[in-house]
Length: 353
Ligand code: ACO
Image 1 (cartoon, rainbow, N blue to C red):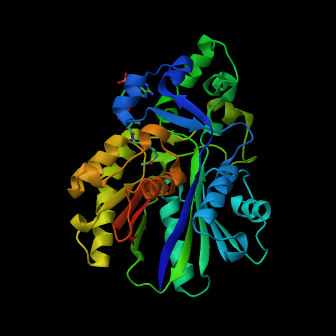
Image 2 (spheres, rainbow, N blue to C red; image 1 turned 90 degrees about the vertical axis):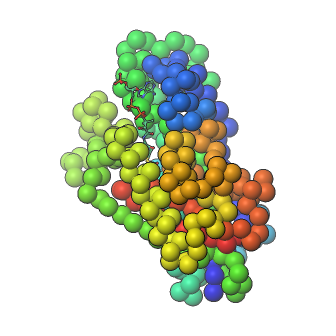
Image 3 (cartoon, rainbow, N blue to C red; image 1 turned 60 degrees about the vertical axis):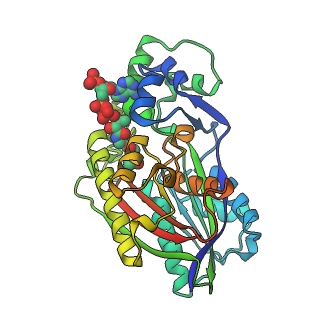
């Protein structure tokens, strides 16, 4: 029994935000963002459009691509670190709004940038255990709510036309190293049990090391504090993620190649056998660094970070969907997935298309 992806889809908000626009509200530039990260633009959600809405859009198109209907799905896995509500997760929202039967269980998982990879492993485990045959797997995130919107952020999505004040500009600039990297978006796949041993998920390897969560986390807003969010935390900027950029970069370029080598060993294939490696889209320099370490040529490592930035749990399903629809991934090809993100969680998977 193998787990096969039978359809994919994406949900991308309509607002395109070019680097130059960010330069209007903080001290940054297209040149800095492009050379450090490869990002040229990202999409921002509209107010009221959360990761659940983007995930549902992606899920609807994945179901259509798989020629499946809601009634055909046995379980839902939703990976996001930015759910619409603190609780419950997005799973019940998908269940109710898309009209799934209440006997369709939903799993909400939160492994940040590795969320889709963990979700794929979970879907495969549920299928191989014989518990479920068809699973809807969604990965979506909206990062814009992390940003201080009172500081002229509506300018970025064309809802306001003014100059920010010097104070707002200075405040936004405090977070520029993180803000410029992220965008909003989601993707979804339908994963199904198949008796075709030639296709499907061959192996996956997952890792976690929580010894330095401070390298990428949200310091404030959490249930260690009473109350869990205070005005002072908001004034301190604690709800904005904290990131040691260089440390995360270093971990990403060493752990992802290790995970790809490990999963290849498990599956009994060589790294050079991989036809297409889908790497979490966090920074073009990280993507190029991982490819170089693995000795994979650029044509085997597609990227779309220039158009979307880092969409966290959305990057891998969005990239997979684009590669399937533009013919980069063809039946029979060996496809690798790898990601690393906050936790740290990381891993890799191998899939025969
Ligand atoms: N615009 C202009 N200047 C900036 C900006 C900005 N947006 N951000 C930082 N700078 C400045 C800094 O203040 C610093 O100035 P200084 O030298 O006067 O102090 C200078 O640019 C250099 O900053 P560095 O942090 O050294 O730049 P670096 O080359 O390391 O790039 C970056 C920073 C892009 C954040 C990089 O470290 C990175 O991508 N790290 C990985 C982080 C990541 O990907 N996180 C996402 C989640 S985890 C994951 O998905 C893998």
